[in-house]
Length: 503
Image (cartoon, rainbow, N blue to C red; front, side, top):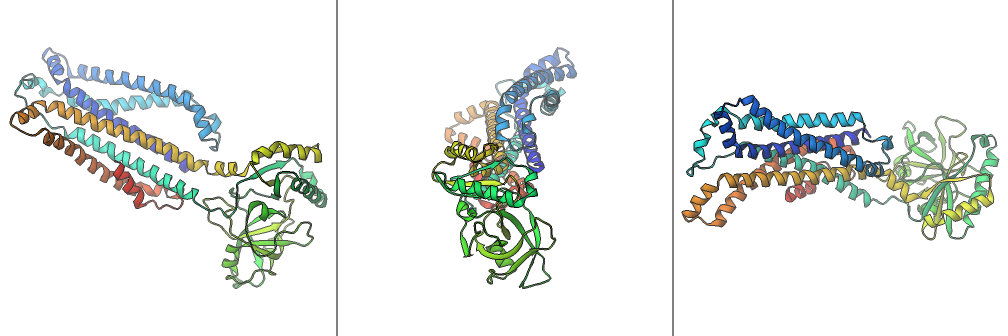
């Protein structure tokens, strides 16, 4: 989670810098409009320190007011964030406290100094004494390169945030197009209470779980049922080293993920059987299944059936047996993880409370009460818990990706809105400062459309410079999100082109 949290913190920091640049540009325009007032104060004997203090006091009041309003909104939005970030560790403990309030107020003070100090100093320079004369009707406009620079900074940072959000969005879209190798729809998952003391008699434990599976399979509305040590598509890699007779390279380590599944698992999850047979119900021989990746990697695509497979380090729970079947590749370790060599051990009781998977004919959630009653009839002393559709588990597993994408997209949208406000404010200020110039040009016969185009070209030029700088910054920072992407390169040209076109 650390990378995700640092990404979000960095995004918020960039957004704050954009807001600071925006406010600084607006304050520059505001102090320029007040130069006449400031020059009068100087003429009446006011000190520069007093005038700067007054300007900073005005900005500090606005910053404090904005911070208090932001804290109120944050407190109201805390519950929504809990729902959005329910997979973050200790997410329910996220709330406003004195540390966050103090940090926010400190940011307000720093923002005041960062945004207000330069405009205040620049707007109170001593050469304003002659600005009274500049207010005559013959005054021509002055250029303001600093404001254009601040607008370019806003566009640069907005493009950076947009690029990050675009990469994460395309990654989420690519993840949504992935075929998991199994069908999670219409599958209900749950567990039944048990005790580790039952492992003293593994035969009785196995019979108890098999009896439960038989009862589930005869329940109306149930198409197939099975147990598994781990839910498919949920990260939980249990990689082991195996010994395989007939291996092409005896010195090569054979590493594969190992999962315990019962009979009916392939039918329940709709995983295709490519060769041989699946796990047999009530089999007394140790049967193993391997996936296509295992065969291609360790057997060179040659027939796998009949090979003996054993764990390199033996204990009572390690798989050992004969490969009886080859199945298709399934993304057992998560939809964003490519299929790995997999060994399925045919065993319905990997622990006293395995994951039950039930494929239903209709909505799996609608079968929850029916299954609870059926288990209660069979074993009144046990409880059914963690009952939910498999699709909900898969959605929860990818919630981190959605959280990053949604929040970064919101930050990027806010950044673009702030950049637009900054650009509008600068153009508006420039237009007011150049009113006399525009009036003279119109009087001399200049076309109105030509003057408007000239103003727009100035804004467009700064925007293009900001976009280019933003693309360059995104190329540098793109590697920071590289490990959060799936199916998309950090240098994805489609994303960069789309961001530049949107700007």
